[in-house]
Length: 114
Length: 115
Image 1 (cartoon, rainbow over the protein chains, first blue to last red):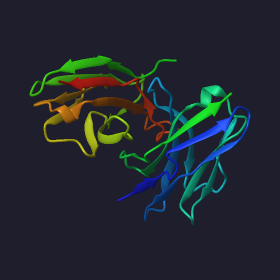
Image 2: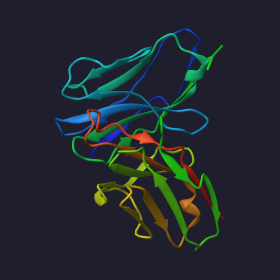
Image 3: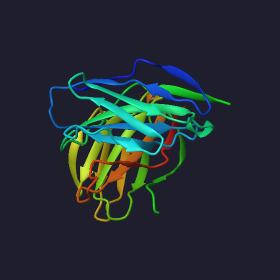
C-alpha cells in the first residue's frame, strides 16, 4: 500500500518570504503521479501543482515549484514570495498510474503572516 | 469555466436515516471520484467511476453505494447513517481522454451532519 507522510503539521512564513513544505511517500511502483492540493478555509480543494514520476524535471507553476527526488521518495513544495492568500492547509497526494485511488498525506497548515 | 457541482451543499440527517449526495462533473469529463473528509483529517478515497462503470474502490462502507448515470452525473447513497459519517464529501472529475487525465477537479463538497 502507498503511504504519504507530511511531517510538518503546521508552518508559518512572513509575507513575501519563501517556505518549503515536506512530503515523503512509500511505494514500490515505478510509474505514478504526485500532487500538491491547497485547501483554504472555504474547504475547496484546489490543485497547486502536479508531477509525473517519469519526468526528471521538477514541475513549476508561477510561485510554486517542487523538488522531486524519486530515489529518496521525496516531493517537497516551495512557495516563493508568499502571499496572505496562500494561507491554507496543504495536502500532498499520490496516485498510481491507471489507478484512481489517490492517497493524501495528513496535511500541513500554512499561515502567512503580514 | 464550468466546475464540478455538488448538491446539496449542506445536509443534516438523523442516525439510521438515508442520504443521497449528487455530483455533476465538468462537461465532457468521463471519470468521477468520491472522497470523504472527516473533521481535521485528510480526504479518503471512497470510489470512482469511469464511463458509468465502477473503476476503483477504496474505503467505502458497505452501507454506502454509488453509481454513475448515462449523463455522467453520479450519486452517493448512504444508508443507516451513523454519527461517524458526519464529514465533508467531495466529488471530483477528470477526463481520461485529456492530456492531464490524472488531474482531478474537485467540487465544493457536501457537508453531511448526522445527529
